[in-house]
Length: 515
Image 1 (cartoon, helix red, strand yellow):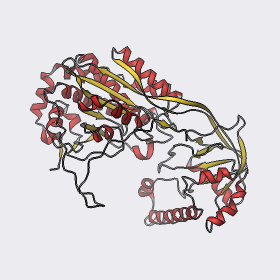
Image 2: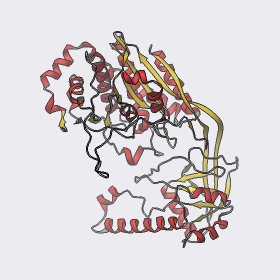
Image 3: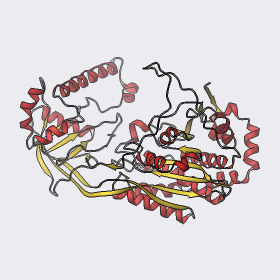
């Protein structure tokens, strides 16, 4: 049975007020979160001081060490727990300048794990993919890329996001724009297909043919935002240019003006480095071998500083732990927080923890995960656990009405098959729950983009999330009963028509980035 409801309808106001007023621990936690919040300080230290946290980078290691030191300052036991190894790499300076047909500095950056240029960079003419008849035609054309910078992304015909067109375009204009854009995109994609490659693997052919570098542009459908991921070249630089400059250079090349760029993209290869999860815990006083887990991945992509993916989830869990330690220092069950590494490459840190600690997973009362931006929590699913309504409703009861008013719940829900770290625990049968946030233009403007920075954090929403998380952890710890793990019957698979199956645990990649 599936239930959708707003908690305002399910929780009587009198019960909520009673729970808040009669439990001094909860009231003290709410007061601390609102009147003595450390979120801004922690956010500044993590995002501004340490910066991006790419797996295998010095920034990731600095973040792990900072978190351990911070927890210890709060009197909370903490450690960095090794689970694997990764290619070590450190981002350096990126500077991209157009030298011909005129001089202009361009906005862009090297991709993660980019092979370093020399200090004076690479200077070369830019070319675009011509119209290709077939793979043989592409092979004939390939020698022409030697010593050239090759643009391999679709040139967006407009840098205005669709919502801007919807607001201002005259009747019919937006429809024509979309039709033209779709047509041009289809032509570009069909042309790439005829080479025998895709935009994900054409890099190797171009590099082997002697190209001087690769230029991409992964627009995120918003003003000034691009997605920044990893390079696929071994020896030549790969950079991402922001839409405006990519389009300008592309048009200059297409019109025969032979633009020339200088690309400086410095980086350091650091060999093989260890990868960690940061684990902190407040030991249980009555049932120390049973666990309430707070969960947030610690790593990020490095096009910006990883503020909302997942700096905000990290801040919420750290602040909740600080408050719990201050006002609930002797919980009945152990309260453990996991700051997972390498979530971005496939939930590796949390999958490793599940694989390495079956005794903890088997005794997990509940896990609460936050990972989708800066917004206040607005969705909570039962994750496919048949009885989740019974205990989650009970644990949510003392949460302030102003917070629960915002939350839509779905019971029993379905288990996740990826997406974030709670999926690692659900697959192993542990009650893991995603505290899903309000959008705040996350997917276009901050998720994996070059604009995911401190200034995008909405601290008022985070304070609500801290209160929610701390109370859920407190209530789950205090509950006299162990939460049921009974699984619901999943819906039929729409493709196969077969009954849905519960996801199974997957092993992590323990040696990464070294192929």
